[in-house]
Length: 294
Image (tube, rainbow, N blue to C red; front, side, top):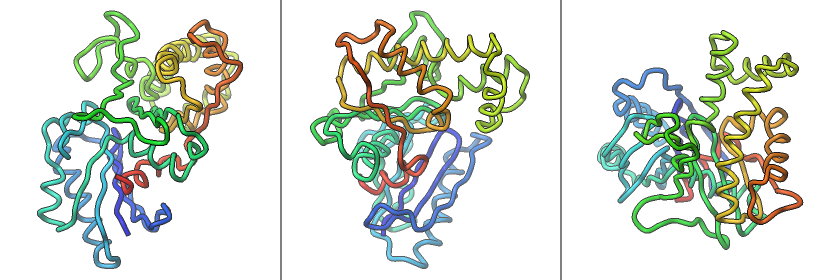
């Protein structure tokens, strides 16, 4: 058995995973306050791993991180406010288990390629759109990675000169226009919904599809999203795209207009008759399962 941990921008998930990629046990914690975030992460992981060790023989721990990893350390995770954090060393001293870290989108891509929707494709792109925008490329059946850092920071490619200020310190980053968090915030603020609940916002959208202001917000979001994704397609020419994160929960609302914009919006250098778009089969478990594959 292996333990997979997915640390997101708003929650931590930890699971016990067998050799077939199935989660046997799982526990989650939502992050409401990022004060002392490092202590919160450590305490939650240690408590749960110690409980699992009492019941099962654990081989190792893999952790999916929403940020930059180098030499098995967190260089920075801007949406968590973490920099230069040696989480693996801290955990290994207490838990007496090997701990490996990898970018969360890379972990999810590995899981979807081995067990999920990307299995039939040798060349694909995985995009995790939630609090931020993470990305990974499978090329010729292997996860494409640079030598020193994870790379493929699609979220921090610039799609608008002098645009929105990003948590990374740059302006105009893809993430500041395409994250589901930003999408939900715009709708909630415009219509005074006082909630960022995905379920409540989806219900509002479905009940108000003819509202002109709402249509404008959705269309504007799709345009920004299409620009960023078209850049990725133009570079890698994948056989398929796979979406993870909370974006997948808006399939009936966002997928059709996104495909239309990509195919007919004069964005692709090499024109296509169709684009294969999949939604993560493993859903929010992809990060946990993928973390055991690193």
